[in-house]
Every structure is written in structure tokens, then in C-alpha cells.
Length: 233
Image 1 (spheres, rainbow, N blue to C red):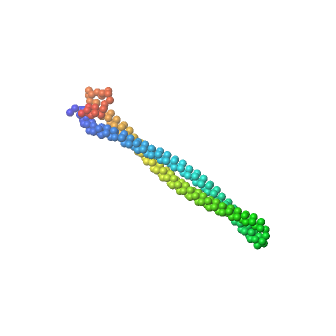
Image 2 (cartoon, rainbow, N blue to C red):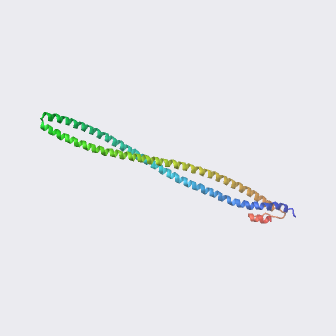
Image 3 (cartoon, rainbow, N blue to C red):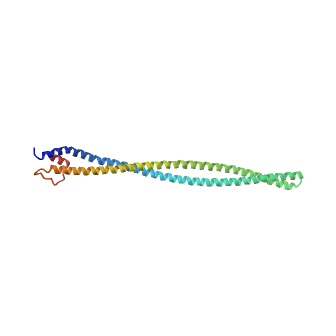
């Protein structure tokens, strides 16, 4: 047994470590790439959620504008309704006054020409009252329609706001997952660099021991792991 053989014995034991280290070294990039792919997928999903969130916000703003417009029209219609009711009340009072006046003239038995004019005016007022009542019915229908539209828009706005809140929560969850993956990826890269440094130091030590025998020269070309293992044998 030469003096080199005791040195080579532990080297042979380390050869398995080199082989295992190479496999582990090759596997680590796959883990890193996998986490990078997951981060990219989460970022893509997050961007999609942000786009949907912005669209939903725009929809809510549009719905709020529609509600404001419908409420304005509703107030206008209610104001018109109040005006119609006031005119109708005035005409009814006129009819009652005309009827009372007509009754007094008829009892007196004179002023036939005036009575005829009063009858005509009374008839005109009654027709106007009918028109006002018809217009009032239409106005009530319009108000009911506006109220229904406002309620529908308010319901749609609430649903849209609920969806926005849901999107915000999903966005927060995705951001949290992405941060966790980035943190994990950073640790994997740090472990990879640490292992790479340890492996290179260990490899240099093996090369130094392997080629430290008398008469042995370290090749000038870069040695592969197979070259080192072959030299150790």
C-alpha cells in the first residue's frame, strides 16, 4: 500500500456525495423554475382580477349615474303630478262654484243667456277635469315606472359592489400567495447558491487531494466530475 492509498479511501467515499450532489444540483433549478411559473401564473391571474375590478368599478359608476338621472326624472314627475293635482283641485272648486251659481240663476228664472254661457263653461271645465285626471293617471304610471327602474338599478349596484368586494378579497389572497412563493423562491435560490459554493469547495478539495501524489500534475483543462472520479480510481 502506497502513502496515497489512505488518502484515496475517503475520496472514494466522497465520490458518491459528488454524484448525489450533482443530482441535487440539477434538481434545484427545476424547483426554482416551478416556483417562478407559479408566481407568473398568480401575477397573470392578479392582472386579470385587476382588469375585472376596474371594469366593475366603471359599471358601478355608470349605474350610480343612471340612478341619479332616474331619481331626477322621478322628482320632476312627482312635481308635475303635484301641479296636476293642484290644477284638478282648482277646477273641481270652479265646477262646484259654477254649479252653485247655476242653481241660483235657475231658481230665479232669468238670465237665460248667462245660464247658457255658464252651462258651456261648466262643460268645458268638466272636460278639462277629465283630461287632468287622465294626465294624472299617466303621471302616476310614469312615477311607478321610474321607481321600479331606480329599485332595479339600486339592486344591480349592490350586486356589482358585492362582486367588487369579492374581487378585492381574491386579489388580496393572490397577492399573499405570490408573496409567499417569492419568499420561498428566494430561500430556494439562497440554498442553491450555498450548495453550489459548498460543492465547488468540496470539488476543489477532492481535486487537490487526488492530484497531490508525487509525479501527478493537475490538467490545465477544466475537469469534469467523471474525470475526477476516474482519476480517484
